Image (cartoon, rainbow, N blue to C red; front, top):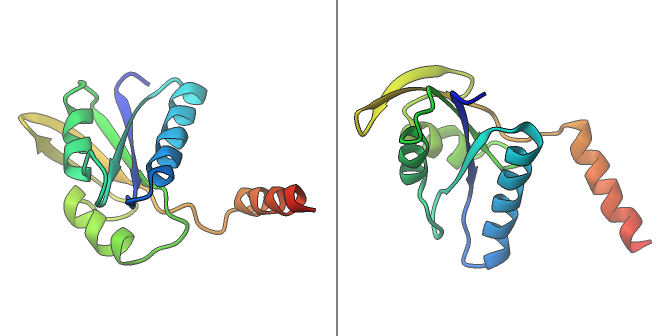
Length: 128
């Protein structure tokens, strides 16, 4: 897994807990799966997606999987992020980032996964 890195992408927000949550997801991914992870944001937070992609490419990984921490598709996941990455969802492209050639794959948003329903039910139980 040394040759693979994950770019965890969030929307970004002026509210600090948005960035904290994305960073926590990234830390949990890195810890649970012993893999290199970098966060990046659409706006309002740093690093930007371009910067995060560059930072991860400079670590020497050969392949980057970019995953948006969004529940559903929208303009950002369908247009903005693919444009910045230079790759469409579900596709893999070789790109050059600051002289480093890497394969970039773009994963889809979290979606209506059964595990999301489990988390939602946990929140229900917390308030009962």
